[in-house]
Length: 259
Image (cartoon, rainbow, N blue to C red; front, side, top):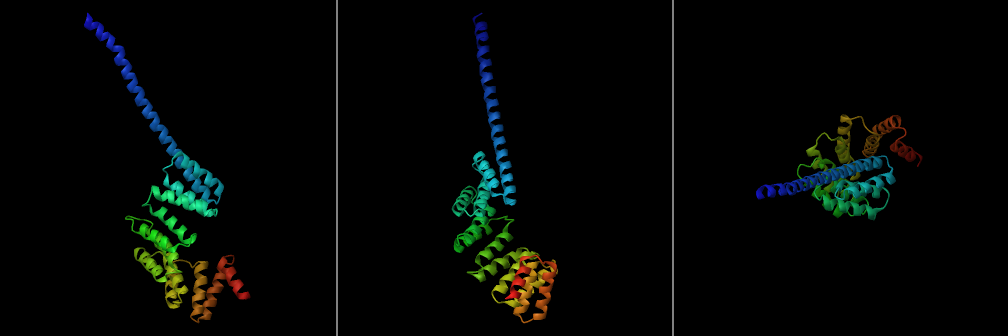
């Protein structure tokens, strides 16, 4: 009889314990779902921020990106994009702060490293540090952005170390021989160094691969002019004015003709 009473007494206790365990499980599930919902909202605000940035609506972009960071403070791409926004707005100290925060969270992300390196070269004039970061990003294995990194590194180096710039571009071309942008960039670098025959070779190679752009035609005309081929240079100028009459290069040609 006593054992039966004890068994009955234990039943409510066991039931209460089971209820507490189930409640704890439900709480854990609810918390997990809540975190997932917040992270999803943060990613949505990140995408909205990127969209507004692309539309050049920097005020809206900043608002969305700041909201994304408030929802998920570990979202490195949000800091990266906020750096771009501040940079576009001319607020360089704030931009660098955001880039540094992104790098602290994702120190091996080539895209983030690239943005910060471009910032250092273009906005701070710190070519040495910029190239250091480019080299770090280029060394990241399985890096799909390597060609872009080589191209940006070459732009950073071209005024202070043209040989190093050419080395970057040669490496890019070795990795991607059909990249027209790199071919044109090598031609432009050669022209800036007075290597006009080399410039012609690369520009003509690019023109065989795609319809020449306004920038290409302008550079081709200047290259031929530097080589003394005035008739060919004139043909390129006429083609530029005919095909791209409203381009910056066409306006530049017209201004040069008035001088």
